[in-house]
Image (cartoon, rainbow, N blue to C red; front, side):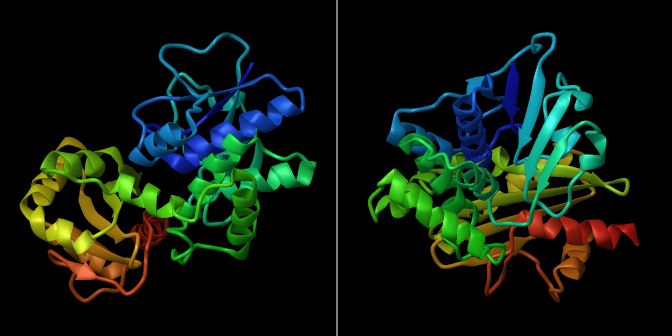
Length: 308
């Protein structure tokens, strides 16, 4: 059996890729099963409820002997289940600049810088002359819209736009669908809702001997939420820094309707690092950008800076 696997606590892009690629392989006569481990994001919950369709199985324990693996939206051994032997990975799809593909010696690589990994999977359908099911198309379309922030993200390419338009025609979602999805992921009724979002999408990476944590939250009405829960954000970020033993940590809020970030740091070391790599005079407790900068764009800059 070939298992389509993602990173820990996968976002919508990862889940959509696992659903889409497993469907494509099955249509080509390959036995494939999408799996995940950890928690699911609120966007995944939204699409799951909308479609009533969710084939990935939550995995626990060990995989059967003889299993093979395909990684989607992930290429770092530290982000996959420890039960997956790197030498058993036969294919990788990812769209990041910073990848660790040298660890997977037997894998066919599909690494291209597009806005969403779902774009790469959807293009595979088109190359094979196979149309995805409506449900798979909804997941893939939603993932592209989510990752590119409805094409406002600077990482958006024409390939993302073209394939998203193709998928939308198959998915037959309403023009109001995107607004519904963004509002669902932004439902924050109290501080605990916001803390869940921060912790669910938090990631620490060891870079040149330093632990670098970035908490990325993508919501509507970002400034209002930060002003309401400023103390709670600080408490959550400081807690994560301590638990993960981070040397540096950044809070990055993204307003998904108006297209900007608000960066926050809470200690002098993090202030100095992220101010330098982002070329900002002073981040402090609230620097607002005029464009969207994603975590996947920040990581390579941090890597380059710390390498010096």
